[in-house]
Structures are given as C-alpha cells and as structure tokens.
Length: 255
Ligand code: NAP
Image 1: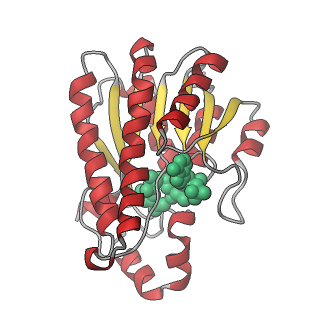
Image 2: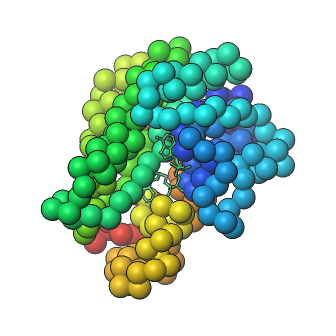
C-alpha cells in the first residue's frame, strides 16, 4: 500500500537537490506530481534527473516551468495540477536560494533576491494553492525552512531572516487553516549535500570544519533524509501535526 496514492502534489524547485528527492519519493508513493522549477536539469553533475527517476518508477508527473516570484507563473503551476490531475492536495514550498554574507556586506539586490524567492515566493504559492487545498480532504502544506530559520548562522543574514520568517509563517498559517483541516508544517534541514552548499563544502575547508563540528551526527544529510520527513508530513500519519518545524539536521539544533 503506497502512502500517497492518487494525491496530487506540487513541488517547487523539484529539479534539483531536496526538491528532486521529495518529488521522487512522492511519485514512488503513488502521488501525481507537478514539478515546478525554473530549470529542468539537476544542478550537480552526479545528480540524476527527476524525470528519469519518475519514469523508472512509472510515476505520473508533469513539469511546469515556474518562477515562484511571479504570481502568473505560480498560478499556471496550480492550474496544471487542476487541469491535468483534477485538484491539489499537497504543496511543497521547496524552491530556495542561499548566499553567504554578513548583513554589512550584503548587496541590496541579493538581500531582495533571497527574500523574493524564499519568502515572497512561498507566500505566492500558498496564496495560489489555498483555494484548491480548501477543496481537498487531504490538504498539506510543507514549507522548507532551515536550521537557519531556528537559530542564527554566521555570515547568512538575509537567508536567516528569510527562513526565520518561513518558520513563523508556518506557525501562523497553521492557526488560520486548522479549522479547514489543512496541515501546515515546515522542515528545517541541517547541512544537506546539494548544489546549494556544494561550493563551500568543496572550496572552504574552514567553513566545512565549522559545519562538521556543528553537526553531532557523523555525516551531513542526503536529500532523501529530508524527503522521508516530507513524506511523513504529506501522509495521513501526520493528520494531527500542524504548526511544527521539524528539524532534519543530525542534531545541529539540539545543542
Ligand atoms: P538546490 O539544489 O539549489 O535546488 C533548488 C532548486 O530551486 C533549483 O532547481 C533552483 O533552480 C530552484 N529555484 C531557485 N529559484 C527558483 C524560483 N524563483 N522559482 C522556482 N524554482 C527556483 O537547493 P536545495 O539544497 O535542494 O534546497 C531546497 C530547499 O531546502 C531550499 O529552500 C533551501 O533553502 C532549503 N534548505 C537546504 C539546505 C541544504 O543544506 N541544502 C539546508 C536547509 C534548507 P536554479 O538554481 O536554476 O535557480
């Protein structure tokens, strides 16, 4: 028995990293998946295409080129869920970007870009999806926050601000939509081996050592570690769980 049989899921940023793993896991569990991303190809050389993985699983999916910062683009992705699969049950707000700057050194355009994608984009996706989620009997919103949405992180001002807002918006939305039985939860990954941090993992031994020291578990996370937690939050097993920010961080925030 698959855990998301015939549910319709929209995953933003689904072509790469964590989104790729979530879309694949949901497809494996019987969901019909809308892949919403600005790109089609994964970002890391050794990463497999989400299309190939879903084809191999014989899963049902569609790709919609989507920029989460543009209302019309987001609405098109939601419309595809409705026209191709008959509605929407699960929204995964995964698209996100990361830069490394202390506040004093942050270029204004990069501050705006992080806020635009990580926060405004998430808001736009929720706004576009809510009318459909209200019609669903299995409605779930899963937001990708971060450990840096729970605690401060050196040199990550804009990112921490955006993810802190995502964590608290998750709690806030859980209150507004509990009566409609829409679960709203977030995941707070630690260091997960994706393109988002590959450059620093590969070129900055000092930062790498800091990240290793802050992760009690003896390895960094894999995208599948986050996808497995997303599966729980998307499934009926989490029906009484709402407003939580679930850490998937190897113990980073347990200190
Ligand atoms: P990733 O490998 O860089 O994947 C992110 C995907 O989102 C990429 O395909 C990216 O495409 C796409 N994207 C970026 N801007 C977009 C936009 N405006 N509209 C639609 N798609 C867009 O990153 P990841 O590590 O999987 O991160 C996924 C989520 O987890 C993010 O929200 C991230 O902040 C969060 N997270 C990651 C980690 C980690 O350690 N990796 C830790 C905590 C939280 P382009 O690159 O071509 O723009």
